Length: 531
Ligand code: ACM
Image (cartoon, rainbow, N blue to C red; front, side, top):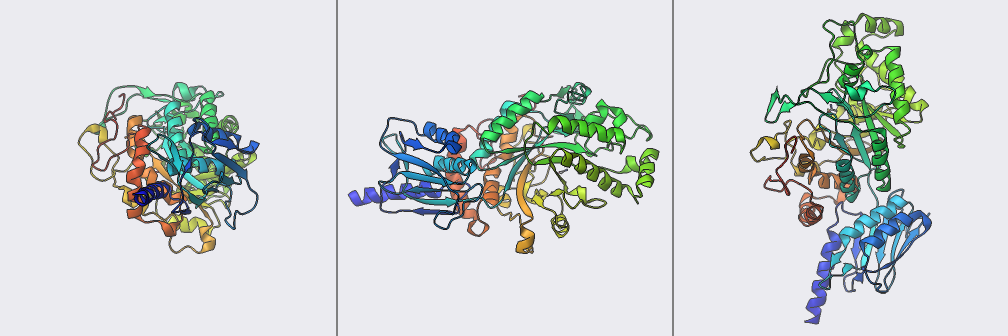
């Protein structure tokens, strides 16, 4: 009897330690030892880890029980394991303090996230940590999620919730797509018309009938105080916020507010905030006035976003207006450029200099190579994987964001009926997300170093409200968390799927409106605009 109870306890402990998502580098359970009670543990930590110590204390609060959790800041490998900038180890040996080691507060934070999943509740209501050793660190430095608020605007409380869910899965980069043809979402004090005019569209596509308007004015924007509040919130979660301000295309929000920034000399010039999704002809004119405007926007936004990178879009900028503008043609001649693709390269390189002067590195979608890629830009590969090769052969860093595996606006395989389930198209089931290796198979180890990470895209024309965002994001984000965190060689779909089935309890506890296996939403099907 005793043996079987002990065996069952060990198996329960083993199962909980094995169920972590994203899967750690190494989990080595000690099979015939008892688990440590964490409820009521005393937490000791150096000042550098004070915030993480407090998180652990409050997660496991209760009457004191004699357990100590020691957070230790290390500067050298731990028994040969190099934790790096974001890694950690957790050692839980019988009758010893639980020891969490990390170089950085980020590492300690990820140890905390792991503890939340590695523990289990005993019949006595206390929380137990199975005995063993966990060694862990991420595969990639850029582990991202992109949220488009240009098409639909969700507001800071939803964004903070999104950041919490990202942190739970050890994502560290929030790419915030803030301006679009359909709406400009950030307050710029020097240019008030951006939010008086550019943040609002006359109507939106009707749900289920995308070519028809719904007749309802729609929009919204973040004040700079709200942006700062979100960044501060993200910082505590060790998430860097990378803002995206689109240029030269996808800029109708800005150009409608200040028409002089566009190609005013083309026929029929009449910019307007767009009420349908699509690629629009309106792009910034290559005027000194435009570069001054962009620099003014950077002047207000760069101090708000402390991260190293600033995203300038760069995608889907049709060249018709430049090809038909006498002014743009004069710039081409003046600068000795051969065509409008080279003009795009000129535009992006000038913007890169403006950012560099403010201490920021430029990142842009893969069209930033049109007409010649700057040696120092970072490229986000979203279309053909050939652009990964192109950039890396040019010596540039890349972030993988391919439509083939990371476009979470695509369908997830079978969809229930109802206009609230409408998606842009495509099909990206979770298995396919999980199958992604962000490093192209034929890359050498030297080339692979240029792949700094990978991210998912939540384009939001058909994410009508926040419930829909969660439905589209989860559980595919759980799969992607493992793609970007866990070692490639240990990953296996069946194994992940088993852990995911258990992991859903954490999503349930957080009331996440994830897509269930039968296609239905976990919490609510109120996923329509205005619901
Ligand atoms: C993109 O999907 N236009 C980057």
